[in-house]
Image (cartoon, rainbow, N blue to C red; front, top):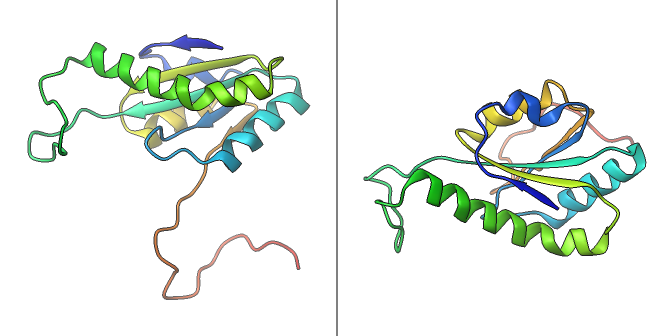
Length: 141
C-alpha cells in the first residue's frame, strides 16, 4: 500500500481508478470490501481518500489538541487510514492501493476525485429511521 500525504490536486486522485471515500473515525467494512472487490474485478488501482477539516476553537472535542499543525494532523489521519486499510491489504495482497489524505470537506474532495474515476464508492450512515417515506432508488423485489 502506498500512502500520499496531503495533495492539493484531488482531481488527479481518481484518474480511471476505483475511488473509495473513507471516514477514518467510523469506517464501514462492507463498503471497504465492496471497493476492494470492485477494483479487483475491474483490474484497477484502488485509491482511498479521506478528507479532514481543522477543528474550530469552539468545537474542539475532549482530548483534542488545537495547536497541532496541519502537517501533523495530515500525518495522523494518514496513520489512521493506513491502520484501517491494513487488514484489507493483508486479505488482498495483490491489490494496488494508494491511501490519500486531503484537507477539506469530504464532499468537495470526493466530487473532484470522482470526475476522473472509473467508480466512486462511498457509504451512507443512517442515524435514525426516516419518519416520512423517502423517494429515490428502490431495489427490485
